[in-house]
Length: 186
Image (tube, rainbow, N blue to C red; front, side):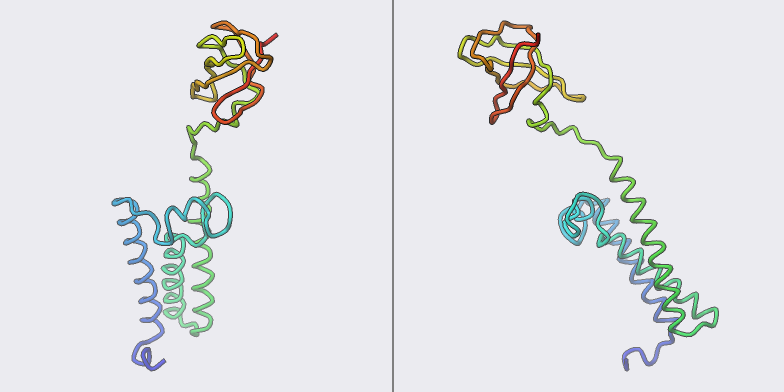
């Protein structure tokens, strides 16, 4: 406490706000402009490493720095308005939680709007495909399937071991490794 003895509560709150704002600017410049990601870890903002699921983490450097900036700023406003240090601290915590929550909700909204063109092989089961390379008796051929916006071509074999000619519509019954098992569509 002797370290802060020469400073007023107003100066301490402004210092906290300044540190939070500086940290926010540094994380923006290093993360957004130079693509270094979050300081917490590789993509911790969006992969939820901290809370166990996909999404935005409340421990993101951006959210924490907004909380610290708002805490210091609202605490300084409380001191300036004549409130005690305890009341100003409570005002700062409330302001930090409010603005941190707004940033968290906005980042969560942005995360929910992301789309992926990733095609998982397991998503193919149950879809209809067209034979692009004929499947010989007890052999393998190739099928073409549209999955969302993507066209996927996979090695295929017949479920009953019978021959299936080119351009025949088939249903993908199962996925075994990188091969799909198909049957003719009735």
